[in-house]
Length: 328
View 1 (cartoon, rainbow, N blue to C red):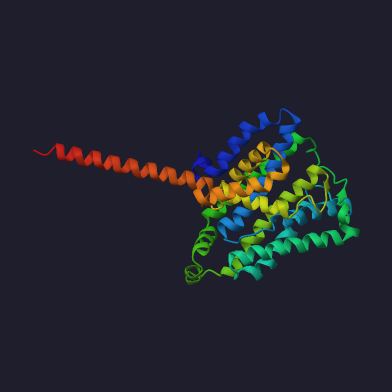
View 2: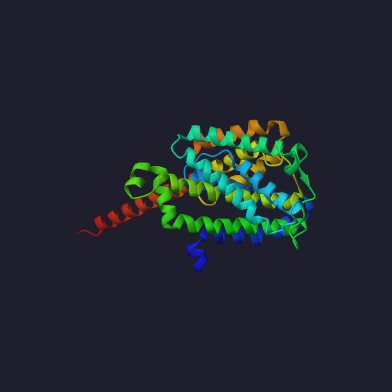
């Protein structure tokens, strides 16, 4: 019960995982979808941390995931690093690059930040294609080994969602900490945060580095699951998709990015043709921005707030009428 009260989002993810995964892993198609959806949820959570909490509008999470995937692939295929140990470079390399980038973008407006992070993603993609001797260039790297005993698609699906649950737990701990509260103040008012003794560049850079590390972990899992990675595996399109997931679900909520990943995945399956994905994604984003600027979870929260206000008003009216009726 302590987990339910202290970390309700983590408890909800674990509960849904225990209920849904045994059903989803009954056939190969849904098993593969569950594993990939877990990886995309990790990417969306990384956007939620950088944009929803730190206020950094990033469009480079796919590039950071690619860095993580390539770091793991190179470590295992070229240097013989055992699986699971290659998670360290897959997390550290994107975090270091993101920290350096964040020191440059902390004072820029959101649009300029988005364009700069998008260009950083393009630079990373060009560097990967150019280093043929290390990354395989346009051909990519194949033969990436599995993760020890985790070799079957159902095992990867369970691992992906276990990583999602662990990330949500870390996310909740961050939000409830003094660091998370300082980030929340900083996102709304830089001047007030500075007056409270917060160092905005350092705080934003650290949050952006953590979000890039989560993206790197997603790339690490993707590389081992697919056993192949190329420049097209985790590209700019994926960065935009991850941003859409976070915005649609509600970037400022812990579970918002996961909800957005589920919604976009369902939309993709309902689309009549792959060529129309951009059109439908844009239409959904416009609808969300017009009807629910805080995402779907923001819309749900507003609805509950209205119901609570209506209920309180009704109770107050009933008490007033009762008091008036009891007067002599």
